[in-house]
Length: 325
Image 1 (cartoon, helix red, strand yellow):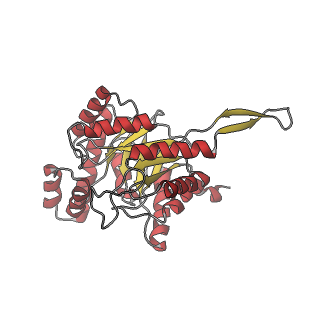
Image 2 (cartoon, one colour):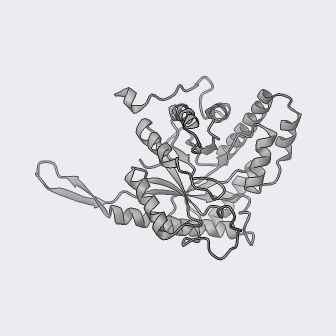
Image 3 (cartoon, one colour):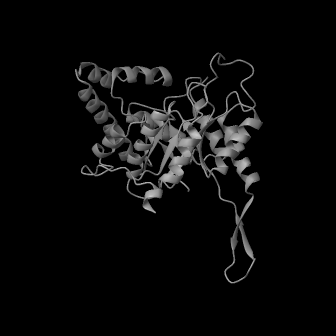
């Protein structure tokens, strides 16, 4: 199912991650039902964090594919892997019907320092983009369609292309060696065959809009989706800053600190993310990608407050395909 960012209203999508237990997985399936009912363009599923692998990713992706009408998008990381293992994993996803990917370099595995000599056969996400496309081409070099009225005859057609998203960094990658390196890297990913970019978190609309302007001037033509997360507690904000390397957003941090109740902090985070979404859409963003943190309530509230979903719309869980039959 190809990802379409051209159809109105404002396209949006979500990111979730595979839980570590069966109980959490069952809860996530319910969350996926709520997210799918809002009609996103896709739901992406991470593949581990901090250099680890995510053993339940394919289970979650299959659930989205078979039990909803939403396109699943699989995260893949390449650091520390061999060509053989990466090829095998890509083929496993393709065989399961997954045709949309987010190609990431990833972080070094636990215990391996950044800059050590051996981090695997694939040195960059651009190489992973090329590998995904090559594996798909080898697996299905062309398509066949029956010719009506001619028994046994088929028409050969070009193979279905995979959608390959990549990461973008509005304020620069933490490991960038110079001011333009993250844009040069995005150009390399585009040249390798990427069809979409999704940004890391940012906290000010101008960060995203200025980055898009610089990227377009440099020759980037693929859509660049802004990635937004409703930050609903000081602890989560601190964790996000540690992972992303972003600067502390003083206004949001102060608002979260002075609010005495969890409910109030949730409202602060939703309002901040909704305003960010409104501002980037007004500035020309092709859609909104929301980091759901496996909780549908805040991200759907952001979409409603931003005017992307109608205020009165509170989507019920989407019925599974099995229930609809």
